[in-house]
Amino acid sequence: MRDGARTSGMVTVGRITRLHGVRGEVCVRVESDHPERFAPRSVFHTDVEGARLLVLREVRGGPNGLIIGFAGFASAETAARLVGAELLIQERDRRRLQPGEFWPDQLVGLDVRIGYEAVGVVTDVIQGPQDRLVVALRTGKRAEVPFVEALVPEVDQAGGWLRIEPPEGLLPT
Image 1 (cartoon, rainbow, N blue to C red):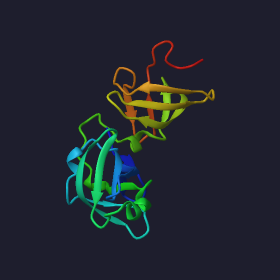
Image 2: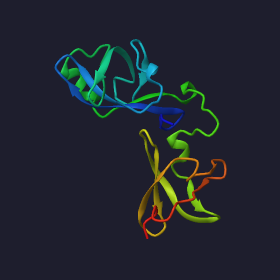
Image 3: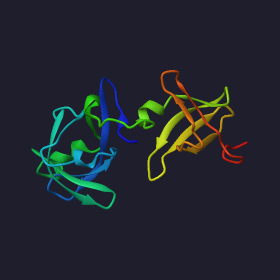
Image 4: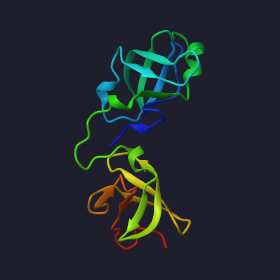
C-alpha cells in the first residue's frame, strides 16, 4: 500500500528532500512500493517551473532513501530549485492492486465507524512495515489504528467509510 495521492490523475511516488553534495544530486524519500520505478531513464512529472519533466540519470541508496541525479542538473545551484518537489507519475501507471489492498489516497477522507456509528475520519496513512491509519476522532483526539484485517475488517471505498474493531485501550478516551 503505497504511492501517495495527487490531483488530476497524478500520484506522488517520491519527494525531493534536500541536496546531496555539489554535483546536482538530491535526496529522495520514496513513497512507492514499486522500487523498479526508480531506475535510470525513468521519467517523473513535477510542478517545478521549468522542470516539469525529470529524467533520472543515476541512482544509488542513501541513508534515508535514494540519492538521485537528474539529467540537466549537474550542480548544487541548478538542483536547488528541485528541493521540496514531488515526483509524480500518471495514476494509470500504478501497479495493479491485489484484493484488499488500497492506496493511501483511497483511504484518507473515509469515515471511520465502529459498528454503524461514525467515530471519526481517516486523515493520513503512516506507511511502514505496519501501515497505520491516522484517525481524527469526533472527540477531538487522534488515534493510530494498525491497518490489519483484524482491526479494519471492512472498507467500503465507494460508500466513503471503513469499519474498525478496536481492542480496549486503542482509542483514547
